[in-house]
Image 1 (cartoon, one colour):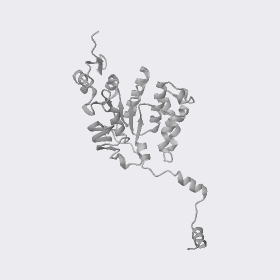
Image 2 (cartoon, rainbow, N blue to C red):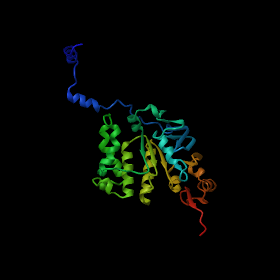
Image 3 (cartoon, one colour):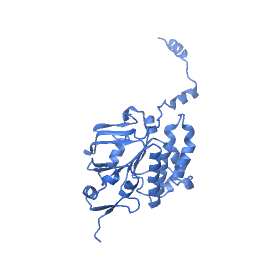
Image 4 (cartoon, rainbow, N blue to C red):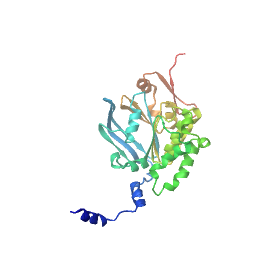
Length: 297
């Protein structure tokens, strides 16, 4: 074929206008939006899950279901597998065996965008390389909704999340200038603004003062009452007992016990799991279990 003929053929191929071609590069794929599930419906399910990290099996044949309308607290000593289980439920870690289902389907069957609409993840540490203003950090949580029918909720979702976490007063401050506790609350606000029906929170209270610890767990309770499923890693057994509908005690990568905190939190079990004698007694007014180390002072 001659050069002229090739040019003639190419000339008959219609070319998209430059603007259309640029838009095509960033076009939003059609995504299946999540719908509100009835209370008690499984939202995230791990079945026979085993995860190996660094040559060590960190989770060993773990099965867990988080339902719409409940708060599940993952508790246990350091290295028990709590954060690994949370990351696996988020489909952020590959499994050696078993699998994870989110919103009724295998996690791998969702596109990245569809998965981001269904689960919001708060890692242990929030790190940003650039000094974004607080309000912009929170707005990042709305990215999965871009181009969808619910994108018009962005401003309201951001404002509500900032008010709930009490960070509205420093909306214009750079994230890098905040204290550790303030950063933790901003990171949580980003997750809340995402408005996913599954919240996966890894130690959200670790850097917080007494007031804001209660505030964060109160938010978890409110979200569950609105129909979301909340799975939260906690070291404070008192918070877990007060706010969780179900506590899952992990030890050595396995589930040692699971159920309502009032049933699961016993001195014998916790003392064995934590290798520290503890005392468990009911609060005199509410009856909620109080867990304290046994001290001979």
